[in-house]
Length: 340
Image 1: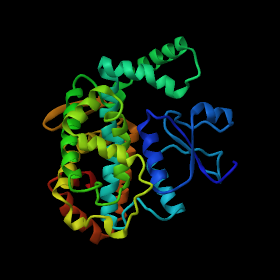
Image 2: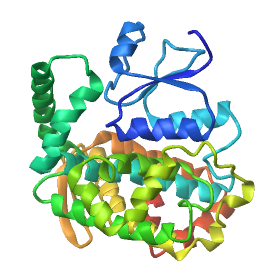
Image 3: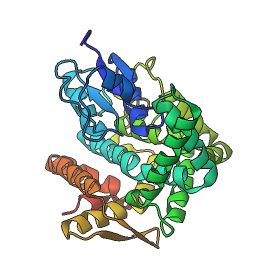
Image 4: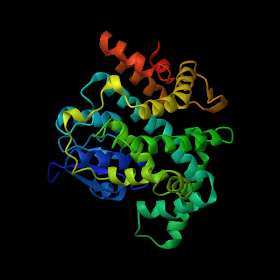
């Protein structure tokens, strides 16, 4: 490698790419952003999951990594300063929960809105192949877009979008817009006056929901323009100068954040727990209840790992910190996520 910059291979329509780039900008970590074609031309090894953003670290470019949450924590250990993980272990676990909600639940809304209605399908069918490779004839771009759309629509059920769950996903996104808009009226970020990993995870999904796909973007502008403005601002936070006291007090979380945690407990938690149990039982189908309504989807093994990681993080808390966390989560529906 020519320098010590991190190389990021990704694409603009990927919420996880946008999440990772925003993290690197905020943390003042030098990087180069390249396309998949650029990576191939440079002879960089392909990642195991090529649709996810892939990072190549200068000290070990032959071992690309893709999972954004572990990457964030690796960077925290390797490059201190401008941390996006709170020092308070209790607040750090809440931030981890917010991050996983963005990565694993809000992505259902992103995928659902993109591939269910024709206006959204048409925009993605046209634009996504251009973002991957602009230097091709229109006929090839159109053919690639049609093939990509067909493949993604066939995968809707993988992320949990189907005729039964679709209305629940849309209602959940509408509620989040209202809750987030209210919270951002008085707080710059989810956990105070500096961004945490949860901010960047939710931001990543919003770059598509609030900034690209026609249906959710129009909904966001109509009902929560502050959320769109926040999403745009989080794209580049290089000028934010965080201070240690900018985090909220875990024992005095604002009511607006408790309301967001209650939305997480209403939607993400029952589905994640039911999925984890289905994986443990080797079932192929997940059955849960979301906001009093039946939810059914295909089993998703990766999200069972997410539950395990959250529980492992809780187990690493001291007994005192576990006792501090419980009353915070009581009444939100999130406490059951950490019960054995």
